[in-house]
Length: 159
Image (cartoon, rainbow, N blue to C red):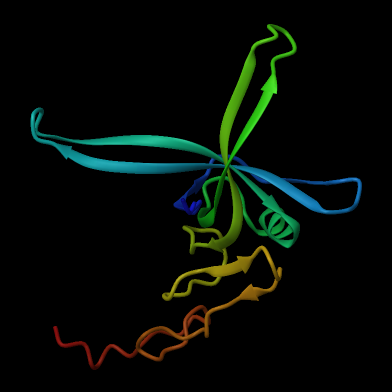
């Protein structure tokens, strides 16, 4: 039977990324991602929310970009795969395990007050394979440049 291991998560970083390097010089960064889920509970007639915290490992150029440009609270979209880590606890001798996401593609989302240029089409993506950013064209759907401080003219607004 064929297998498929793909995860897509969008959330906010729970801490500033810290970049470390392997002995061979490859960058690695562990980031925490908070993913919110909201729903309406018909029994209590209230809006409910739950937060799931996910550990994500970024490698190579992605890890370096995360360390340079991302910070706690910043929105990010991660595409990757699940990986199960298993080890023996040194204190108790029991087997332990933890499920984590290994990021294969990262997209930085426009944030609130982070000083980064706002793009209405989304953020900037970094692919794990190439390490080369796949950027937006710099224009929004209406053809107006965003991020440069210019806005569409108000005279054509129908309301």
